[in-house]
Length: 109
Image 1 (cartoon, helix red, strand yellow):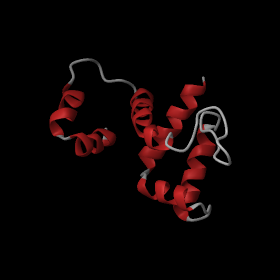
Image 2: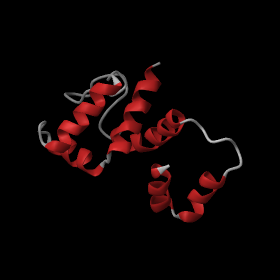
Image 3: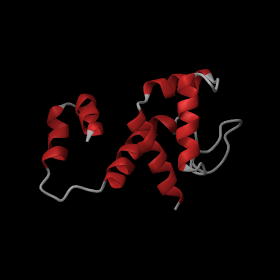
């Protein structure tokens, strides 16, 4: 549910409130992470494609979940050095990285 708090900051409480107060049964954590990852992926798709290389930029639709998480944490820690990816990874928290990993893993299935 932490991502709903972040959405509330991004879209304003008025838009996020219906998501929190919906009468429908709550989706599973995996479903919530997928939806949040799908939302977050718009930033990734600025450079990355899902299924083909764009120059030296790898596609994200073929990366295993654990590899994606490790790579993003390595960019964040400075172990991997790519200025654009370091900047992106530093802007993401662990839940956001997990959500993106779930999204990119599930769209391959």
